[in-house]
Amino acid sequence: MSQVKFEQKEDIRVTQSSGANGASGGTGGTGGGFFRGTGGPPPPAAPHQKHEGFAHEVGDALTKGAGPNGYLAWYLKKLQTDPIRTKMITSGSLAALQEFLASWIAKDRNKHGHYFTSRVPKMAIYGAFISAPLGHVMISLLQRMFAGRTSLRAKILQIVVSNLIVSPIQNAVYLTSMAVIAGARTFHQIRATVRAGFMPVMKVSWITSPIALAFAQAFLPQETWVPFFNFIGFVIGTYINTHTKRKRLQALRRKYQDGGRSTETRTETRTEYERRSDRPGPGAYP
Image (cartoon, rainbow, N blue to C red; front, side, top):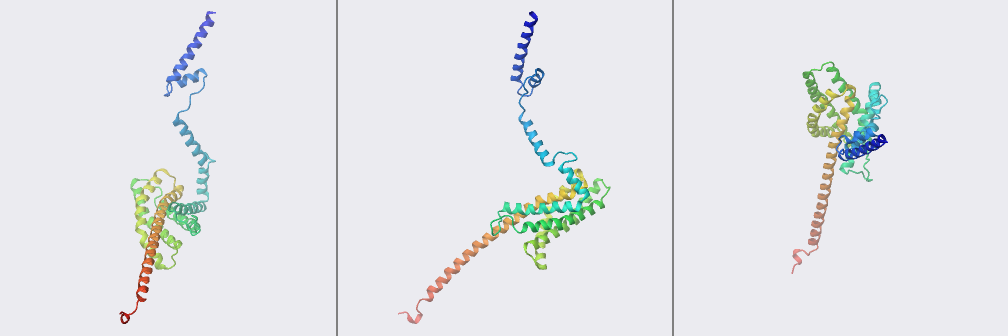
């Protein structure tokens, strides 16, 4: 009987201890472990654990995990087995999305009030058939020039060659293509567009290209360089495209407002002239 009473007291003691620990274990102390040891309900998850679980689920959904059957692994495999086609699809999709996003951000609609303008498919064609093959060739040549050279001097030299040779060629082709897409048809129109935009675009490239290339050298395999640079170009191109569209829309608004004021001035002048012409001539004055 005394043994039974002892067990009952022990049970009561344990229950009280669990409650005490549970009350004082809200900060992640020993209360949670004591609950698990006695078979009680688990403590609620901390807020940061919930956020980590949500972020993990989102990343898992986007990449389908980091295993061999994931989307990221599938894309990297496609880059190795069919690099040109994969880069063309990637670059074309990003170029079209860039144009659409820039139109949406800048509120640049077509005559039907839509953001999906005729420039979107044109940008897709440029990205797939001009930007992707050119980027593939230029990056491949750059990688071959510095293959097996991992010293700091070689990496710096690679960045210099990229900024002085690769970037100017790519930017000149980009500006030429943008001029044609915008409606330029003569050599003088295209040259004027390239000359006006070359140095501003090169300044942006000289700021972002060394950072992007240094990051690729340190953290990315070489087969992923072109898609990575396409993504960087997508972000920068969206910003530049949006800024250009906003400036063009502001210029059109000013032109429209100035044109309206000029029309009013001409109307007032013509009305005053007509009013004066209706007066009798000097010989008719009394």
